Amino acid sequence: MADLDLNNGLAARRPLSPHLSIYRPTLTMLMSIAHRITGAALYAGTILLVWYLLAAANGGTAFAAAASFMHSLLGQLVLLGFTFAFLHHFFGGIRHLIWDLGYGLDHPMREWLALGTLAASLTFTVVLFGAAHFLG
Amino acid sequence: MAPESTSIRTLTSRVRHLGSAKSGTRDAWLMRLTNVALLPLGLAFVWIVLLLAGKDEAGVKAQFAHPCTAIFMLLFVLVSIFHMKAGMASIIDDYVHAPRLKEWSLTANVFFSIGFGVAAIYAILKLSLA
Image 1: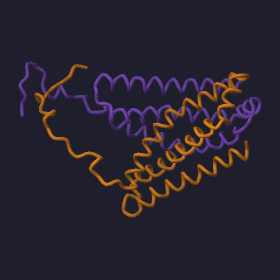
Image 2: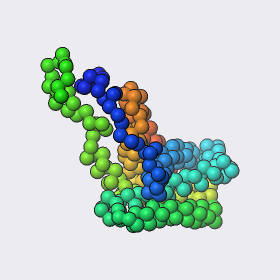
Image 3: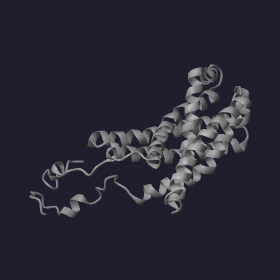
Image 4: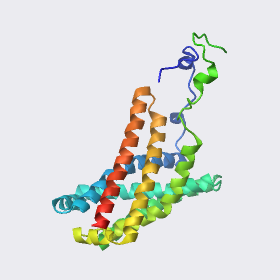
């Protein structure tokens, strides 16, 4: 697409409105940023899921390699991060759905929702990781 | 303010369809739709992962032989393709401004999302139908 300059470079000379960096960090802001970061992390984490599924489908040495990585210290750390990212994004998704429906936008409800998301994701990371070790 | 121009195209025709993200309501709706769908499917995914935890190859294959495991994993992956593609596209729209880089990033996003999805679906079908 050809570059369009409809206002003869005026846009480049216009001052920009203040951006994120001028605001004091708030909990809802940090949780919003974390939601985006965990989303991007899960995007990368799909490689891990595909690796596991393909390794299981092919079997033999492929599955043994994937299983030994998952049981290694590095693998366990990656899985712990994946679990937290998944749960944080999951509970964040519920929060965004509540907001999209028009509820919980007022103070202090929005703060409780943000805090609840954080508490639930941390708690269930421990619970699920514990359960996986207990079952596995 | 009318800019100097050598083109005979009207200003409206030059800016039409050039919204910042090149799309609007459809993307917003798709994100909400997949958000709702991924709540039960995400729970199903967690349940399946817990069932698979620590299982050997035979155990994993036996788990995927169950129709519920295969169907819910397929649904989870299928909906995730659209959700992750839309999410990454909005990140690219927000942070990548250089025109060429932006277009290549959006292209790579589509390729990666569909590539992930097809590979995962292939593996799930192979596991469950074997």
